[in-house]
Image (cartoon, rainbow, N blue to C red; front, side, top):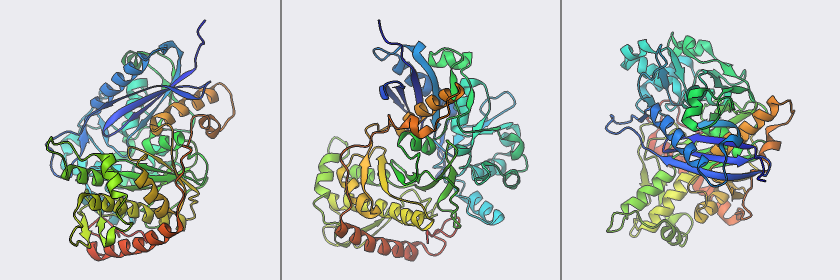
Length: 507
């Protein structure tokens, strides 16, 4: 007779695609994975980055269908689910709960002027990528559409709404809007009114950590192929759920996500407020806080190098071969330094910046040197943020890498020395989707009357690799000196304001 399983589903609705995992709570393992890719809406003005929320719902249905078709999986064994979503996106619904316009995403920089204006008005930095400037932009540039809006949501809130029929939010994701009081873990309605006087009345109510967003309704059940009534957890932003799925549920464990953009975050038991506003003082989705650095430029820079040296067939240069060649280039690239702000930058606050190469000499533009310079430039920018976190009293005891580039051995070596901390990968790369599944299991067990902390639920699933890259003193000292040169070059190149919406300095 086959064993009855307690399966939990985790979804990660991202910018480039939606990924899903199904975990067996009793055995502490992932039993199935699935993913589907999609892109941004094409043909938009410079700086605009948008997706239609219907794209996410279609992808969610497809990936769950693939999971449930995996051998040995029985849909009746699924006990709950949790949704991770890309942060900061603006989803707007009308009086009939229909989407008014495509969602403006975290990477949309067309709202830089609104971010600058809001920063001046409220007396602190409001990053371009946050939701508040998007609201202001829509109200000013699309007033007829804005007049139709009755609900303002974040991407994961919208997915939850489509699954449960309930409009709600939670503190982790909401703390990235720009109109949230992180210390009170509640909306700042006065600040929301500064963004637009209608906004306070358009926000969904907040749920507490570990609460149920709602039971899966008939429409959600039909979309997913699951039984109506199973609990949907609060979910959260992708960084908050990645923290759960990577073990950043206790202080000292720092997670660095290496994707097109990059993030660095850790769990804290009290708020961490950066006076300059460059380290985001987020809440997490389990009742604590998640100070977070976000940079716009990471693997996108190395991918530019691969694309520039594509083969005759148009395929990008082979990643493994390029990494091996770059590993033979001396650390510091013989003076070649890349300020890697190809997409503008969020930290430091340079939304309108472009990238700059320094120290070009004969041979500098060979592909392996450019590739290493791209790795070093993006890593030094992350290291600048890590230094800021330490100055704010945040521990950086060990670093766990997630994301597409986490398994690149050269990048691990560079980061270990730049961050002066041991670096490891995780056996399960889809940390945000895994975090959704773990949060769902925690929520269901709490609802059944168990008193337990989420770390106890997460621990069996979070397995760092045995291959740990330890910092080497010579490399630490070299990159410390290069980091100072990097910061000076940023100040000299982009000026005190950096051409951005605020001071643009990490201090």
